Amino acid sequence: MSINQNIIEKIVKIFLWIFTIITIFILFYIVGFILKNGIGGLSKEFFMEFPKSMGREGGIFPIIIGTILLTLAAVFIAGPLGIGTAVYLTEYTRENRITQMIRFGADCLAGIPSIVFGLFGFVLFVIKLKMGWSIISGGLTLSIMILPTIIRTSEEAIKAVPKPLREVSYSLGGTKWQTIVFIVIPQALPGILTGIILSIGRCVGETAAVIFTAGSSLRLPNSLFDSVRTMSVHFYILSREGISLKNAYATASVLIISIGMINFLSYWIMHRFIRRIEGK
Amino acid sequence: MNREKLIEKTFFLIACSALFLLALITVFIFKEGIGIFLKIGFAKFIFSPDWAPSQKQFGLFSMIMGSVWITIGALIIGVPLSLSVSIFLAEFCPKKIARILKPAIELLAGIPSVVYGFIGVVILAPLIREYLGGPGLSVLAGSMVLAIMILPTVISISLDALHAVPKSYLEGSLALGATRWQSVYMVIIPAARSGIIASVILGMGRAVGETMAVIMVSGNAVRIPHSILEPVRTLTSNIALELGYATGMHREALFGTGMVLFVIIMILNTAAYVFTKRKVRK
Image (cartoon, rainbow over all chains, first blue to last red; front, side):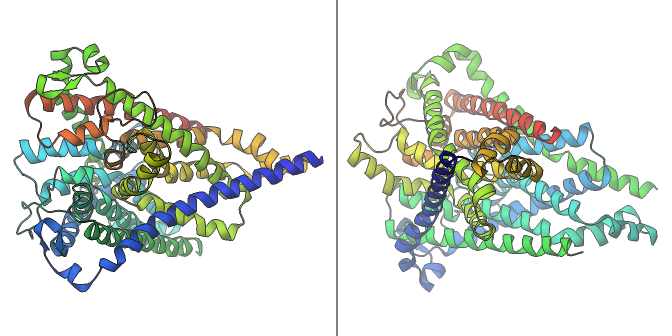
C-alpha cells in the first residue's frame, strides 16, 4: 500500500465526515431554529384557548382537536385495509403474479405526490360526492395516502413472526383464521403499531392533501361532515398570509414536538419488537 | 371448509384495495384531465409557455421547465450529500455513532414540508437575495430546500443497498491489499449500484412531487427561468395555487397538469422498481 493511497484514504474520510456533519447540523439547525423562536409562545392558554381574529391571537385548541379527529378518521379507514392486505400477502399466498401486482400497486400509491391526492380528493369527495370540506373527505383522502405505509410495515411485522408459533396453533387444531387472529396478529402487533404510528406522523405533517379536502375552518367540528383545520394547515396559513409570526412559530413548535414524539414512540416500539423476535 | 374459504376471499378483496384505489385515482385524473388535451391539442398544452387561465390560454411548458430546473438542482446538491452520508454510515462510521445518526436522519424525514418551506423563506431566501441577487424566492432556494428534503429518502434506500452487499466482498478486497476506500469505491459501490440508482430515482420522484415547500420558496412566476436566481412555478405548485378557485376548463387544465405529473411519477416509480428488482436477483 503506497503512501499515496493512505493520503487519499484520509482525505476521503475527512470529506465523508464533513458531509455527514453538515447533514446532521442542518437537522438540528431547523429543529432548533423553530423551537428557539416558538417555545416562548407555548403556554396553557395556547393549548386550551380558541384562536381570535384568524389566529392572530389566542390559542389553537380547535386545531389540535381537528388534527386528532382527522388523523383518527384516516387511521380507522386505512388500518383495517392495510393490515388485511398484509395478512393476505403473507398468510394466504405464495409469491405470484397477483402479490407482485398488489405490491407494485402499493409502491405506486406511495409515490403519488400529495397534491395529486388533494386534487383527487377535492373533486371526487368534496365536490362530486358532495361531502364538502370535512373530516370525512380529508380522512378518506389521507387514508389512501397512508395505506402503502401500513401495508408495508404490517407485512414486515407479520413475516417476522416465527413459523413454529403457527405450527403449534395448527397442531392444536386451530384453523387458519384462529391462528391469524389469536397468534399471528397479537405477535406482530408492535410492528403493526409502528406502521400506524408512522402514518399518524405523516397525517399530522401533511398539508397539500388536507387543505383542499378538510378545509380550514377554525371552529370546533360537530360531526364528521364539518370542516377542520390541522396544525400544518394552520401554520401554513399563519406564515404565508403573514397573520402572526409569533403564533406561527409556536404552532410549528407544537407540530415538530408532536411529530418528534410520534416518531420516537414508533422507533422505541419497533426496537423492543425486534429484540423480542430476535431474542427467541 | 366453507367458512375458511369465505375468509380467504374477504382478505383477497381487501388486498385488492390498494390496486383498486390506484386504478380509481388514475382513471379519475385521466378522465377529468383528458378534455383539455382534446380541446387544446396535446402539443400546445405541453409545449406552449403561455398560461393565462382568464384568457383561456393553457400551456404547461413553463411549469414543466420549472419542475425540471428545481429537480435537477435538488439532485445536484442533494445526491452527493446523501450518498456521502450513506457511504460513511455503512462503511466508515463507528457502529455506536451510526446507531445514533440513523434515527436522527429518519427524523429529518418526519419534519413537515411546510416547515422546510418556512425555513427556506425566512433563512435561505434573504441570504440569496443579499449575496447573490434576484428576488431570493428562486430556483436556487427551491432546489436547496428540496435537496434537504430528499436526503432521508436517498440515504435510507442507498444505505439498504450498501448493507445488502455481502461482507465477504469487502473482506476479499481488503485481503488483496486494497485500502478501505479502494474497496468501497471499486467493489462495494459497483455491487450496490442498482440500489443506489433506485434511491436517486426515488429521491427525484419526491422532488418532482413536493408541493408546499416549493410553493413557499420558489416564487411561482409563470415563465421559463434563465438563471437559478429567477423565480419559477412547478407543476405541483400550479395545481395547488389555483385549485381552490378553478372551474370549468381551468379545472380541466389543472387535471391535465395532474396527468402530466402522474405520468412522470409513474415512469420514475417503474424505473426504480426495475432497479430494485435487479438488486434482488443479483
